[in-house]
Length: 136
Image 1 (tube, rainbow, N blue to C red):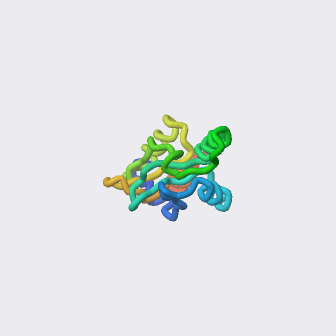
Image 2 (tube, helix red, strand yellow; image 1 turned 90 degrees about the horizontal axis):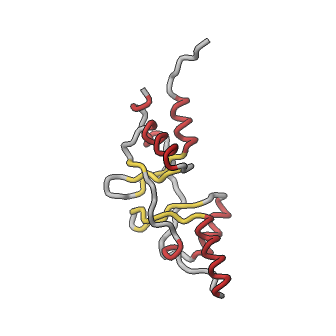
Image 3 (cartoon, rainbow, N blue to C red; image 1 turned 90 degrees about the vertical axis):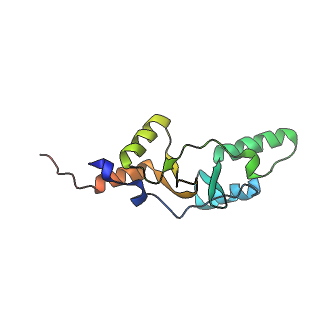
């Protein structure tokens, strides 16, 4: 029954993204301004990686020791990113979340273009929206 629920119906599509050439400190500003912990790194619509608070803090810490705080997103982002395919269902998403321990995952189409993001909460919302008879 839940395999018929597509993540595309529940994912977020209006995402805040970063360019790989963006200045690291401008990304720190975006994270703070929007109250988010990370964002996809996209070039020409294609997902290249993710940049997170962790990545930024790590780069700032290294830069402090080396006397150079800053740099480009490309230099600090995480390149290996778990994703879900656009045609995935909520069961696949839930299994992926449980296996990988992620809180949210980018959703890509067949060409690797970023089309959205799905969170664990989105999956729960999808399951709860499904008409499940309550038992006494």
